[in-house]
Image (cartoon, rainbow, N blue to C red; front, side, top):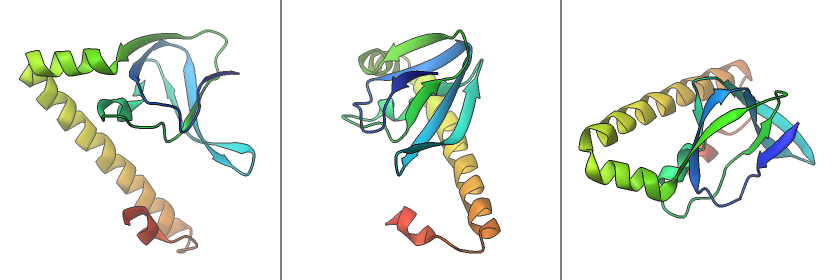
Length: 123
């Protein structure tokens, strides 16, 4: 495994995976718990679309080889400024992504019999 970035690092780029696998993990008491595995054709680092954001998870390359496309924050902004259709498509994709994440969160909450405070997520 190789570290790609750590939680709380500055979020400066969006990554698209051409080859390989990356685990997105959260740090829990000196351990890394995988929250999602992403692979070919998928993206991560979506909070790089926000100004001065910090990473919310740690990314670990878990495959022997990986090939990633790196899109820096400034390049994303230039693309959005010059092509509103791409920006609109990205916003739709992000809305679908966050909707799916909320569905997974709610399902996890129901399956855990409410052993964590869902309300804290929305405060």
